[in-house]
Length: 350
Image (cartoon, rainbow, N blue to C red; front, side):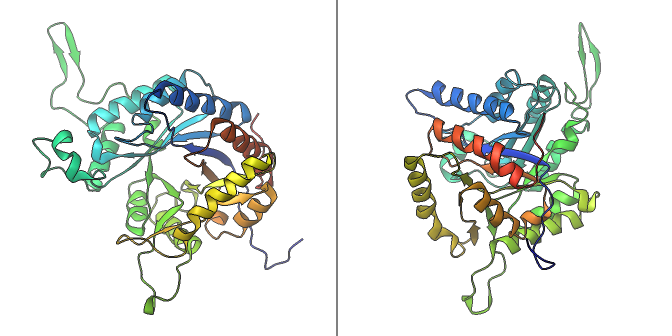
């Protein structure tokens, strides 16, 4: 099968999944419990990692660090990540404390992913979020640099020592020494990829990239995989670890091996409704979306092996569709772990 011209991929080393954790406004506990159960299922199925999206003022998980703290007490092996925490909503020092605390509770399994930029719909929320400093807040990479510094042990105060009966540290406490090497940046463009590499972070790349260079005449549709590949190579070119620097890819993948007829129809309709946005860059940011991958594990594996960016990574955090039901996620995750993973060369986790 195949000859010298056939594309080759790295064998998949780490298999992960990503969920948004939707819930009903009238019964939020049920949705959060469903997310925790899905993470527990992921561990039983042998996934290497489970990742949570972050949503503010929506009906999805607004505090993934708190949810992952709960997940850390229901699991023992699976790595727990955020993809991603938008730092425009966060105080880096306080977040560093929370991340270190959960990392210790989990036994060193936390993989925090972050990004920068102003909060979504900032004009409508800034008076509530930053009533006194809205126009002075810095939403640049400097916000990430501050977080990295605190996580990695830089001084946060000019005072340390004893005062009365209390003892103070000049660094964030608790400290979790390995956490600094498990910080991820979620980026969609070359500048983000370069910055993440220069600052020794890991790189999360998803089903959205920026088509940053318009084609002459505007007639050629940019190729998603080629753009994503350029980001991966830019990141590694600037990372101290070079080709060994960690990259995780987060495409939407929906295997149908064990799905029933109703589920298959539902999945295909979902992907078809989202397909038009993949044909050209969207909006002023020229965002380009990858098509959702629906089909048998063998069919999906063939498409991934032909994907230029996938061929250069060995870690994935496949994104679960946001609006499906709990039983759909069980079927999808089971097929990913038992059928798609082996098709991609991954050895099952003991």
